[in-house]
Length: 389
Image (tube, rainbow, N blue to C red; front, side, top):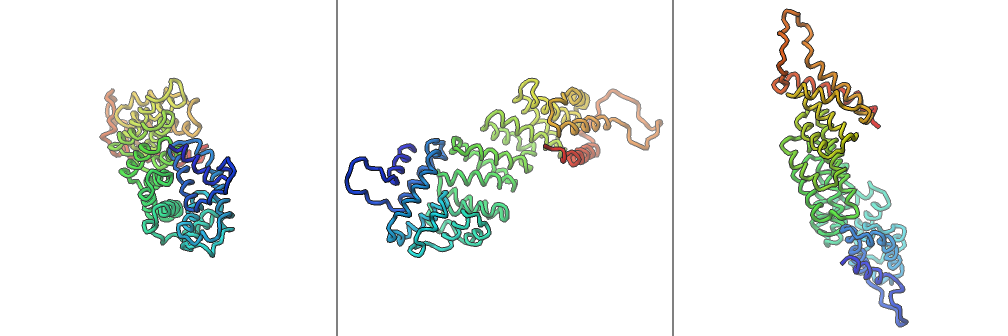
């Protein structure tokens, strides 16, 4: 369906649309040209590579048609709004500045705010667009404005940005605007640690846009939202996180499970460390660097809980040469910490020492010991942070 739309859009803007001689075709209204452009861009959200390859040229051709249009067309409010949509869809601001602004019937805040945004004047754009309510505008324009507001306020007012990205999704469902809103919102919701919405947005993206040209960007933002928060560091939610990760490729799943395991270990969350590292083991190849990292994290989770002997043996068997540089001192310190756990407490006399027994030390029942382990792992992370590549 998208390729016919692409052909139709090119015919609308191409001066060679008619092969046979005859009277020149009546120029399309600017708002019709922009609708055709949006239809092609929506194909990008559905994975149409032809649409992706041609839309830059189409944007240029639409702009040229704007310049060639009779000045009288700009009195139509639909055409003035189309210029704003054109700008926010990737249109060239230098071209728009050549249009007869005084002839346009369009809200000056929208026009000037759109120009400021595409020209990189973020503060001006925020001031001009902040008070505009997207739902009071026609949906085609309102969705675009809401998407831009979400981008403008992502760092300064995250709750407002999330609200505006919700508006964008609701005003223009099934379009590139919704796809872009999902990509932007997933990171913000992750940082806000709203797990239910994080899960909902992920499922919505997978359901509707898994073939998007920009799907890779979505999963990168998903990963950032997951690893820069505590979303995955909850044993009760881990199965739901694992289900979300099943939607992505094996290599990415492996990478994320390793990141989760490491973060959980440094925060003393040994059960999550165990769950994530075992998933990583199942995904990794024999004798690979990923396999060694997974064994390291699993060994730590065992040695620092209730499988001391097996965990320590696993830690000692890890091939350090296959670990990334930043993990080597962490492994060394983890092994030392595990060895220290069985040392007697300082200040105890020989007479006060309990008899040696082969019984396994049950760290799960010793909150003081676990707190000590967590504190030392956290301190170690601070010490090794500067060595990260």
